[in-house]
Image (cartoon, rainbow over all chains, first blue to last red; front, side, top):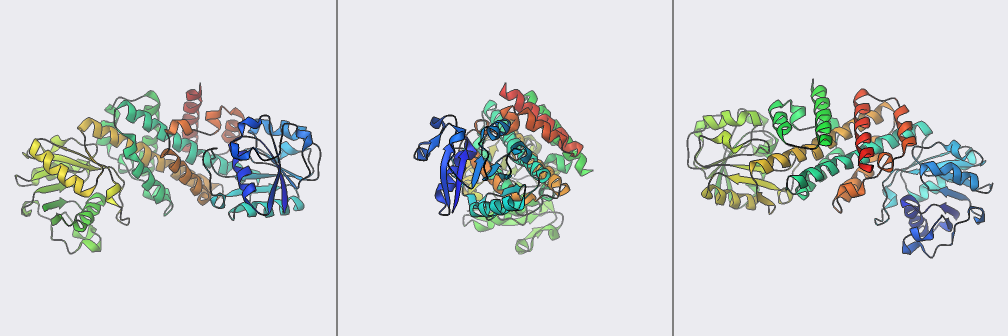
Length: 251
Length: 251
């Protein structure tokens, strides 16, 4: 049985709290945050405090707060022998420097409070500052997901950057396409089967091998027709950059 | 029963041929192309010709060739009372101007010869130049997919442009992320659950409402850490453009 203290009331903290409650070998001893009302109702029964120095005894303290608040939270925590770990993909373990046993537990996924995810499919990148912490974090991570790997700060930052590309930037493309369809009075929903098929394809092969479209064919006539369509400046910039990169890749 | 003649040996032609063969109310009377060897083996039994003027009698002639070849193919076809339709999202029906009964049958999907798709989920945008053609194309389209809608040239071009954004450009982001991960010796496969979750989310709400990430939070520290990571010029340009657009959206 591993006893966990969890700090935060955001999307990651909520997702983690739900998963810890679901696991037989884990106990969520306490949730700490500024405002219990930010939690969804299903977590109201968990012992809650807004005092960092009241944390009950536990083996792992997870700091699941926004990146810029990690160090401040770490500084307010009482010194302890527990493993203190943050959940950020882009932040150094050194932010927790005042704690002897420190580490990182980074779940590579996008979370929202409304959606319950299957953690067994979520990759976890973990790291500790000594052998004992490594053992604890490895055991803990593997209870949460079979897809847990030791990863140093550089690797983790690279994965975080790649995640921004495939998640945040892809979503921005979807959002721009959504705005564009709305402005042209055509139905964005019609694109959903195409989007799903594009996603399925990359599970089967290197995406550079399944690149299609006018730019990768060098079809300048279609590109010209697209460029004649009135669109926002944002979309025009995206269209120009991606098209020129795809034309260059073709050379 | 509708008798169909099909011109082309590319991805769209192959996908259409397979679907027509599967449909009880459709007959694939002939496939026409330059080279039968470009067809997968399962289509070798279909009557094939490389002569455009030998087309057997049919009600619908589908020209599923690349955009720049549509007009040439149209000009080589004998004049006929059949409906002559191309399958391009970005091309005008006028390319088929010498045929009295002409139209467009545009399946909004990405095709590859290896993958068999479920056509009942593929949106079809169709258009004809007169009432009789409209009736034929409506009947034909609805046999292939319940998601078939009349769409004029402008709407179709807008949907085609939006499809380029969500399919070709998204795939380019995946390809750049794949190259980046390889160069950093981290595992791209770890991103697949995140990509799938991003795709699932847009089925539930307007993507601009589920935008996450450092730029949409205005988290300049994380953006600075990302910018310190060595990356290709292509990726740097994409990162800068998307990050500045997302920061501007936040304002």
